[in-house]
Length: 584
Image (cartoon, rainbow, N blue to C red; front, side, top):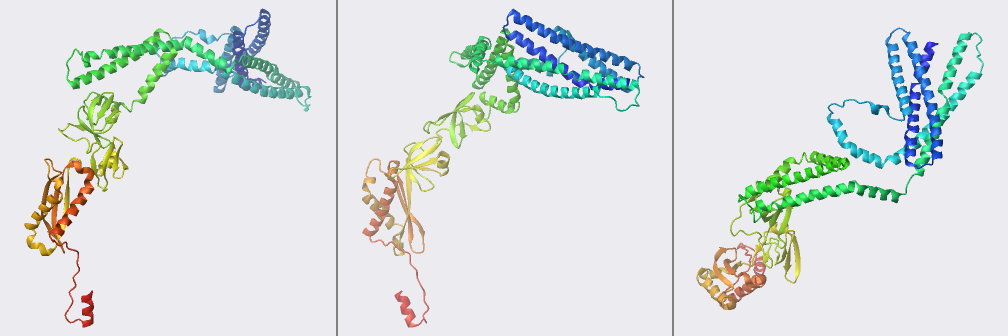
């Protein structure tokens, strides 16, 4: 009989604990929240207090019965031999008794008893310290979502209690049917029948639906109060915004104002080190170092000042957010520290790229005018030839000293160029992204700047040279080295007199000399240096020179050879074949 009682009570532990926890949440939290939020009349308060006291008394009676039953089980265990199984059961009963006593105290006093336990905290671990920092943020998020979470929790609890009520009622009906039924086995002794009845009565007390119905009633009432107290969305948002600007919004504005005020004020003092009124004359590289260190210290001072402001204003939420933000930035930057170090070296003019040196960026040469948090690059030969880059874009690049009279781009706007793809035109636009050529006939051709440079542009606006090869017949071999070159010199000057007879002639120099002998002609090389002002007539002048050379040949009866094919036939060919060949 004792063993059966012990078995019954031990198996009832989980359900008892769950019921007590649910009961505590139902009676304490919703009821207190409702009492605090809803204005009530004195009569309503008295009626509510009476109903609440009756419920609490019922619960306390049940808890007292549970504690008494647990003590009796402990006494029965103490009479048994001290085995491992008995010791485990004794510890389990002690834990259950502690939980019952704690619930009894919490419900009777309507306070959390553990709040009065004063324990020395000691040194907190780092995880506890992180929890202390994040607690204001988590509490703020919890406050924002408290009402929806309470409503959802109550709905789930009502659903659970409804199912539990059906199960308890079904179990009680089964127990009552067993109690009303007679034992079929007549051989059982009266003691066995009595023990059987006692166990059924204990089970009947355990599966009492009254407690479940009480919890369900309280949960439904709490849900009704929560849903009836819901404000419209616009009112909720308006109240939240007003509350924010009354407290945290004001603190945020003050903190931001202090941050930027200190930043502006301290950055104004930079003129003492780098402006026209500087009190120290330092080398350029040292001045860069000083400005970088000063800027870092100013930033740290402004951040610390903002945190101290939040501390003075006692706004732990915003202070926690700032601390978490700084921790996140530091954590995210752990892999960027080497690159940041290189950027700092560049900003201090101690890196591989230095101010007032030549740098190749995107395939185009640039002059590094200044380096700070941003780098300024200049190329006066390009339209819009200034660009500002983050200093990090210069990491991995190299600069070198500038050479005197070094060109920064092969062309200037309005220059005439010839490209490797036989394009001939005038530069209309040249920027860091594209170059536009204006061809004859008002046709425009666009290249990317890199593609334009890859075609090796030949700028003919500063002057150009024609190299013309002209062939004469072998019959003029005896006159080729002296008489014929003089003849062409004289003829060119006569035919193109307008290009020779001036203080600044268009044709600067003419050179004529024998070049080579081909299979059917003796070739002369004509070299004519032309002034760049005729670059817009490059093709026309070339055609004019060719026409002039042919005219000189016609005037002097100089034979221009043509390609010929000679056939050597044997003497013993038939007459008819020989005649046909000769005719051909």
